[in-house]
Amino acid sequence: MAVSRDGSKVYVTNSSAPNTVSVIDTAMNTVSATIPVGITPLGVAVSPDGSKVYVTNAFSNTVWVIDTATNTVSATIPVGVNPVGVAVNPDGSKVYVANLSANTVSVIDTATNTVIATIPVGSQPVAFGVFIQPAPRFAGVAGSKNCQGTSVSALATKFGGLKAAAAALGFSNVQGLQDAIRAFCRDCSLRLSGRRGGHGVAQFIRVLQLQRPGECYCSNCLHK
Image 1: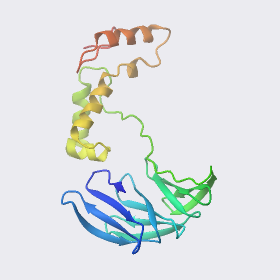
Image 2: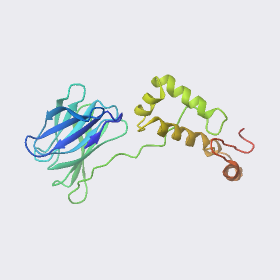
Image 3: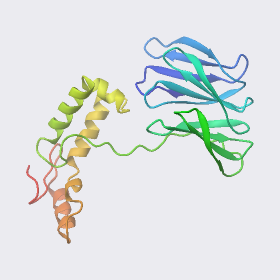
Image 4: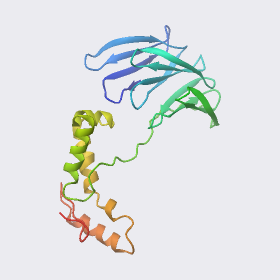
């Protein structure tokens, strides 16, 4: 099972006949589409932009690509024997498939829908996983007085509101996005990195001593 980044759709593999993927509309909690795929679908992953769904078919030795705009299969990609787990990297350019019986991982180039590498691994890989995302960075300057306001304003302008921004950046709700912005803006160490000598460490300790919720002080280098 996999959830689209904006939380509006859930994709469920049905591994027994008739070998399908069910699409659930989370607003209505109903199945909005049923998509025929290969034999014994197991793993499923959604691309970061939500435009594609990748399904491993264990007994077809393939990955099927679903176009989410039309809920139809747009490509079939041969991989190793008994593909199970599948994951898409953060920029959507690569898909990694764990091949259970081949003891390999297939690397798929999503631009061409072809396998560009096969990596030997341990016995019977079955991993399902998501990539670790880098900590988000925002438009404001970490530690500065107007960091939070600048960051919020930039996101609202770019995405047409904070709700849309939260969905686009992978947060489950606006509160999660706001918490990330606050954490980013309070991290004065971003401004102190690269300073010469030991002053950076001393100043950062001073930051921890003075910091209160919603505020950040960086001793001599930043203002409240």
